Length: 315
View: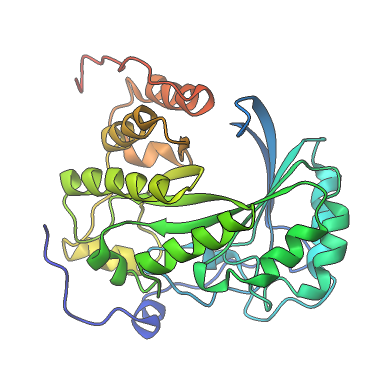
């Protein structure tokens, strides 16, 4: 394994390497979109995603770049419901919705609990509501919000990696036992979980990264996580760029993502999705990129392994 540095990675160090945030309007969601996704029932359905604008996450993880589109101040009561109304005005009817807020839905300074009831009322038509949260903020507020919803609540959690030493160097302030307890709490209360898994974290070679992404899927599904999303790690937040300059990080290849996706599907333990956002960053072959991207998309939707794409240039 590549050398894990002995210097302290903390908030101060991470913040010192950041650029400025992007300008955002606290009255408006940062973005809205609709994508197809295979649901837990096995159907391929449209899912609306609303990227809320709110206070930055207090957990400043090493690899995170979501802070770029956040505010510095707590969200006033009423602002988040207003953003959801604005988003719903732009979205077609769907049965499932994700409320992603660049951090933690159950962070009271990001989403005030006073807004839960009106948010739940706005989400009345949806069969599934998916939010994201750090394990340390998973508590009885989740149950409070769940009970207000007409549909089912699903919580997405950043597991990132099952490699214990690397996990501790991500400034995430979570260990594997805390993740385990979090999933058990949610499962015991009939709340489904999905886990974000990062491919090619710092300090690991590419073969090691593939292996540990596979082990992370094993770990998550073994705890009862229903869905895993494999996300290629990227530079661009300052800290990751510095690590890259020191030879401690490199972007994953598209081939590695394909390997991990194939492994996850063959487990047949739950849904597994490859994150295709900015996928071109991880490809160095313009001849086969579009076909390989299409293959991954079909694998996401149908949860089956398709034959590899052959390319005269890179295979």
